[in-house]
Every structure is written in C-alpha cells, then in structure tokens.
Length: 80
Length: 80
Length: 140
Length: 140
Image (cartoon, rainbow over all chains, first blue to last red; front, side, top):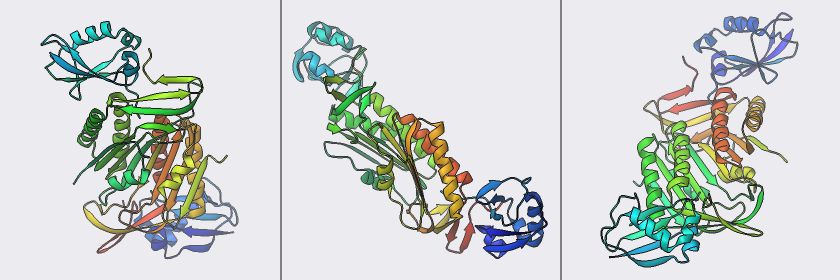
C-alpha cells in the first residue's frame, strides 16, 4: 500500500526531501515503518529520536498504518 | 514637639483630614502615638489596623519620633 | 543603563511602553502582567475604581520591589507602572513587565512584583457601586 | 463567543492584538508571555532564527493547548500566536496572552501554555550563526 511521507526540520535535510510517496506492506505499524525509514534514510540516525504523526496527530509505535495515510517525521520540536 | 500627620485612603475619611500639624511629648514612640491617635480620632477603630510610615518609610511601634517627622497613617493597602 | 522603570501616573498606562523598556537583544522572554478593572466584586456590580496613593512613598516602595526582583531573580529589566485617579471597567491600574534570558525567571519575578506591590505599596482603591462607595481591604 | 485565538503567521506578531482578544470586563488580570529572539546561545553569537512548522498540525496542537488551559485553569480567554520565517534579534516568535478573574490562574495557564508549546507543537527553529546553521534541539 502507499502512504505519503512528510519530512520536517532537520529530517528534511537528512532525508533530502520534503514529501514523498512511499510503498510499504499492508497493515504495517509505525514501529515497522520507523525501522524501514532508518534503513532507507540512514542519516536519520543522526538525530536521537523522532516522533511520527499520522494525519496530523501524534501516533505511537503500535498504530497500524492505512492506505493513503499522511505520515510526518517529527524531529524534536523547537518552537517558541 | 511637633510632627506632621498625613492620612490616606479610608483614614482620611475617618479622621476628617488629610494633613495636620500634631503636638506630642518629645521622644514619643510610634506605639504611643498610635494610642493617642485612637483617642483623638476614635473612628480609626473602625479599621482593623493601620501601619505607620515615618518620612516615607514603614516604621515599627518601637521607633522614637523626632521633631518635624512626617508621619503617615497607612490603612491596609489595595493597589494593583 | 537603567534597569528599572517606576511610574505613577494619572494618564493611561501603555503596555507597549512597558514592553519596549524591558525588551533587549540579550533576552529570550518577557513576562507581563496587566491588572484590569473588573465589572464586579463579590457578585456586586462595580461602576468604577478610584485609586489614590501616597505617591512619593509609593514610588520608593515600587523601586524597592524592582530592586529586590533584580537581586532575587536572573532577570534583565523590570517596569512597574501604576495609574491613579478614576478608572473605568476594563481600564488598567497596573502593568508589570520583566525581561530575562530564560523565561522562568521572568515569570517568577513578575508574580513576585505584583504580589508584593499588593502588600506593601501605599496605594488605595475605592470601589464605586450603584449604591455607594467602599474603600477596598479596609473593613475587617 | 470564541475563547481562543490561535494563529501561525509569517507577519509580525502584535502584542496589543493578543491583549485586545483576551481583555474582558469580567477579568481582573491578564498575563502575557512574549518570546524574543536572543542574540546568543551557549555563548555563541546568533544572527537570526528561521522558524518553520508543519502548520496544519501545529495549529491543531496549539488549539489543544488552549482548550486544555481553559479546562485546567479558571481562565476566561487565551491567545497563542506563533510566527514563522526568518526572525531577527529582538523579534517575536511567540506571544501567549491569558485573561482571568483572579491573576494566579492567568499566570499558571500562561506558563503551562508556553511550556507545553515548546514540547508538543511541530515548529522548528534553525539558528543562523556567522559560521553556519544549526537545527535547535536536534542533536544529542
């Protein structure tokens, strides 16, 4: 199935892209996606951790992804 | 000796004056003055307590007054 | 450089003036408190508040608060402005502004300043109701 | 009546706008926090900060903070405004304003809002130094 990946902050620089369509096995969890991403975009290891948002809401590792989900890579925030 | 008395806030209304020259025995303390004032301006008993400032600084009951001191009657403050 | 701005005035207080006084390139945060005249007290409708002060002493006490805040907290500058005279509902009796490198100190100093002002500064307010007037805090 | 004002903008933030939104005849106090761009970090000279956000999600997270503040504290209204884009030293990335009947709740809610914003809202700043740029918080 396809999802859309969005990269923000330092993740944009490390992944080399802002937004990309991404293919992964159906019923993959966020935890599985994170492992995939660290392989495909190995520079993401340069940041200690990142959070994931699905359709504009923070989501934990056990959440199962759906076709067409918009999945954002959220490095440590630094607003304010 | 003479001192100057100033009344503020509700004390102005209770004493019926803003400022008055006041005669008291030399070397009187603030505690003694307070007792005198409660006799002369008995309506001051209507407020629970009042503080005294001598020459624009808060002063305790044991402070000895000097000729020409400016002594202010400070009812509970309510600024802000 | 003057690190404190202390003022008692019968003119309207100005939030931007207080902000501009404390703002500085070395600071990451500014905490401000604005007191406003409320339309009721103890469920009774308030018409206006009339503030009066022992002004020379009030300025000294406000200066002491500012100096103590600078000594106690890691702040850069502090402004304490108080209005006197008749203030309508929504108008501003007091503004406190504090700047600091890190925000926690600014918040703490701002709260310290308004709490202390309400305890020590010789300023009094008379509440005007539809049926009379009362000096605030003066009755047991 | 809308009790929250949430905004992300590339224009300059306005302190008086935030004040005007929260001010109300029923309130006795307004607490405000203004974040300002500091000229140094860890003793290194900063030239400017560049803020970017995941804006639709950031607006949702800011709204959650405002709604939670209204639920947790006895406050009347809250404004949370954040700027994006390049900000020079002294300029304003964030303003929070909170009005309440009694001042303690306004202070608490204002601190809660800025503390939570810095933890949860997906906005990032890049510090620009004379010799390069760094994404803040991103390096262990």
